[in-house]
Image (cartoon, rainbow over all chains, first blue to last red; front, side):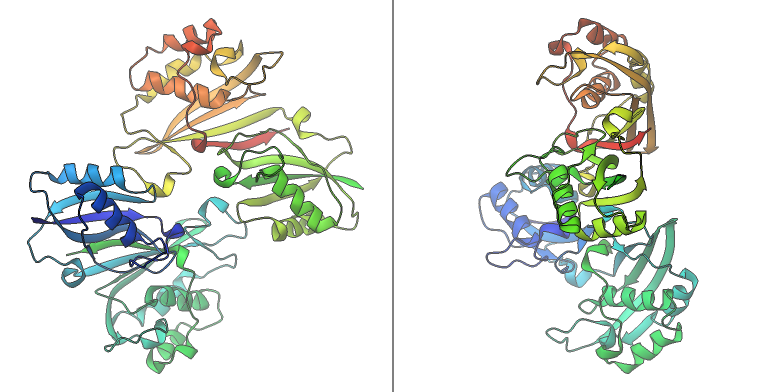
Length: 246
Length: 246
């Protein structure tokens, strides 16, 4: 028995979120089915983060105990990819210490959010970007983003649900970049997040970007700790768990 | 009654090809359903080309007779986009002469074929590229492509089906470009094509690219007029009808 970590990508379009649930298709469910096909016994996995329905990943990380000590890292990778559905793909496999749990050992989680900012739709990006046809002022969005850097109570910028007992979180960086004329990337780096937090950050910055709000309004929303002041959530399908750092 | 042309995109993934058929979802079928929803009467459309199942378009062109003479070009565009499914999108609408039929008036049809040429898969491109993990020599592919330029009998590079009575076709240009380190574009310009012809051209050039064939073999295949000599067809999902010129 040897603990193994995997870095993997998935297209969230056809999953009911990450976490295993009976009777619906989830990323964890499909991953554990593939592991069971490979190793012939049920295997539990531990992931760095649970993404919501529709959210994608290019660098999710999970760990599990591998019952076969003879397989190399690339053997495991190939066996898994041969048994996974087309919308999950293992990019990297490496051996880790017996108690490695990505959820507790992640030092930084980086999310990417893509906005298709053009009058014209691009249907080939419809599942991977938020199509927002009104002009966005990126420099104002950057000003608004500054208020979010650091450790704050992010209750106002989160999704209602089972409440976390602790609502302080640390955002270390937000970068907003125009990748192409019509494609905007919002990159958020943080240690951990409340539910829906990145999507809420994006929705609030977009309010600033179209000029409905002054950048300072972001600080007001944050300090209110009141969800009803917030601009809500940007659509799930623009969001990618890009990378987890340990 | 006024004849209207539209330029439109579609994601071929969830269609059984272009041409209307009873009981399956096709691009023409969905387009004509949307037109009927807008104009309350059945409307027939005439397209520049019929794409196979799984093939995409960024610039398909179709014409139809618009029963409402009061609508502007952009009214028609907006009404159609509001009634089309998410995987079809009208980019442009313009008025044409009463007898305009894109099929007969197209001077040039440009197809783009995308090859993801990397060991590592990219699941977000799985429906829009052919994942080909072995190294391709682009300069050899270009040498092979030269033999196809001009007017030839392309029987060997086509798909078996209802045979065309005339099997000569004219290819005016083939460009092969590495767009990014791992992404190769094969751009084919021609007047018209036999069935499966672009996919066959790509499959044969890939044989040259991996070194299984010398570039000259492409000429041999072409001149044989024998499908059994050909490398077959590249997958449909890498192919886009990019643009139709009139």
